Length: 609
View 1 (cartoon, rainbow, N blue to C red):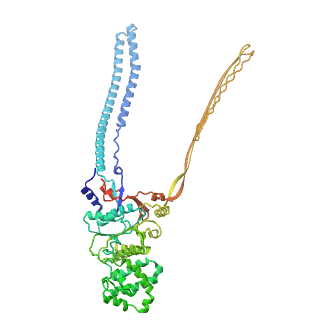
View 2 (view 1 turned 90 degrees about the vertical axis):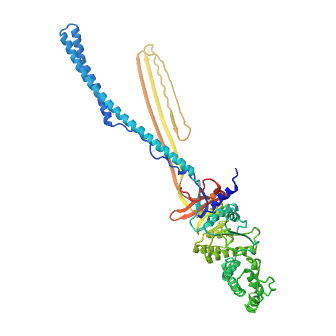
View 3 (view 1 turned 135 degrees about the vertical axis):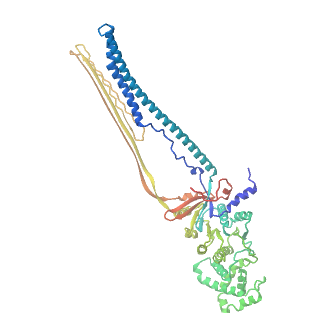
């Protein structure tokens, strides 16, 4: 069933909740269930004294009965017999026998009464114990049922997806494809946007920030979305920079942070600084280009960027003729560099927005696009460092396009101002491999084996114990021997002998059992003059069993995460690796698909384990 559009937009709006969220971590809800820890009550035994008393009464009753029967019953019977046969005594004997019988009966009845009392007392005690046990067990069953009901309710309310967040200000992401980047920028950027303005610099040339801009617009956020170089004239790049900051940015962009071109950089900086001072505020790239053309003696500016007086001052008052002659090659080079960017920011409106997305358009790489890329990086650094108020959080997708020196300056500027910085690198090599470890690190799919190995090296190795040898033997032996001999002889007698032997052995060393069995019989007969008979039987038995079970382990220093793991990560998965003091690197598997927020049982907070 398709969900209504309003419901989908409302669910996606939950992406814009605070917390530096990278995605979500799945948690099996059943892991939060707790077993009922109270053991089932046991039936308590009756006191031992009552059992002993009943047993003693039973034993005494049996003993008294036997004694009474022996010492009282027998004389009474004899007296009755004698009286019956007239052997004397007559009635007196009958009376005596009756008295004796009655006395014996009293003894037996008394012991029976004592036995009955002991047995009844034992039964009453058992009845009390049974009643107490039944009550305790019913109470235990009620408590267990209540606990299970509470656990079911807890399971019904529990979330399955929890927010994966990072506490550090800087995050470096390595690897992944454009679909994964788009999902990560959307989820991460939305969470940042809920707390502060965000500036996204998209150098991937595939506009991976488009989904974030579209979602931000649906929730009512003010968005500036521009693609370069087609929107060069209205671009915000270069705005809010003073003349000196713009000159610094242009010079660093032209040289790409190369230290070996320091002399040329110094010359360029001197010329452009002089031009910026001569052309007047506000200084733009277009004014600098027209100033360079005036120094080179080219045709006057037809667009009116420079006034006649400004052009005259630049052409004839700024530098001497000899200096211009020596610097002509540098002037030509700078003009060629800056010519494609002459219209940058010419019609920028300067309005403030909470989300600014600057994206390079897809297409071939050229000198102009490379210069624009470096200029964007310089502009971001100066904007963070010189922002009069609260600087926006920065996300750079495709940070491989910027030089190491430029990225380090950007990182330092963000660190000083407390600005969250997220850098997405397509590869883990060259510049990116030199920067890894400056903050929290996340890895997406790294197809190249060398890059995956670098990622595994960063996560580290650990000593583990692995089973290297397993030895198991089972053996046994059993022997049964029986011999029997019978002989008889006389003059015409027969002497015969017969013997039977059996031998069986077996062993088990994880191989099929082997059984050896042998039996032999012999018989001889002959005439003899003597008579004899003999019989003998011998039986011997021996059995033995031996067993050994041994294993050997060896200490191995191996990867915590194998390189192949980084090569096989799913498209929207990333592995967050955060260094923890004293505990190595903590790993958190994360899903960054923004559609997860539309599922049930998804929390925007971090779930407890």
